[in-house]
Image 1 (tube, one colour):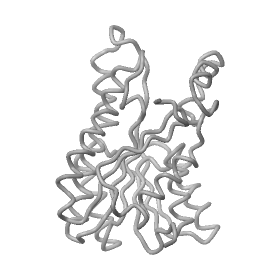
Image 2 (cartoon, rainbow, N blue to C red):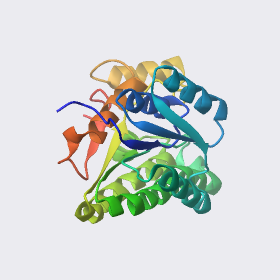
Image 3 (tube, rainbow, N blue to C red):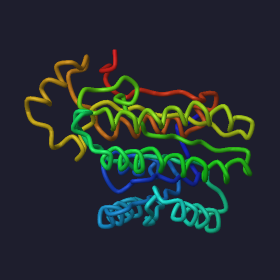
Image 4 (spheres, helix red, strand yellow):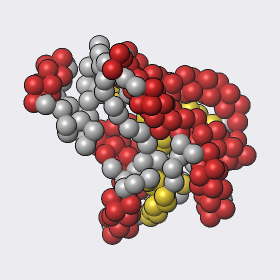
Length: 249
């Protein structure tokens, strides 16, 4: 059996940049029709669509603030109307903010929960609505190793990413009777624009703690997504796959 998603319809939220961009590209190369959502990165998202179509893939970009219930409803209605199905939902969109708990404002906490956790709740619920009628589908959420074990100076961010894991475990039990699997990926420190602002000292300290001695690449996370999206993972459900070079050990 090949690692392929040929003929599948895949949604990648926050697909214009970073990990989402790599995921969209890899899924398209593996044969999926990819729907990329963006909130502010229109130029990047449309550029990725052109890149995918130039190599013979199929993709489109749709603007949606997936932390807003009405926009999520319109997004999934549009997908079902245009495509007639949804096979893969990669819930990747998110932001990061770092601060000690005593320095974290309520507004900062609320923003992280809204964009990182509420959006996954809304999209997971909407995706399940389509997939349960098909009796098939794969939902893959992007959490973080920080959501698994916490990190100093990232209490609010960790809480938002841990919420994704709670959703994953619970919905995996609810959705299995409909033939839908629900899993999560917990990336470690990945070379994206989110980590580009780290100081050299901070990067060196992180690398020193990693058994592989480096940051990961967005493509390495994308390959893990492809595995969970493919038929090779059909008996994997309710799991968290860490893509972190062993950092969490």
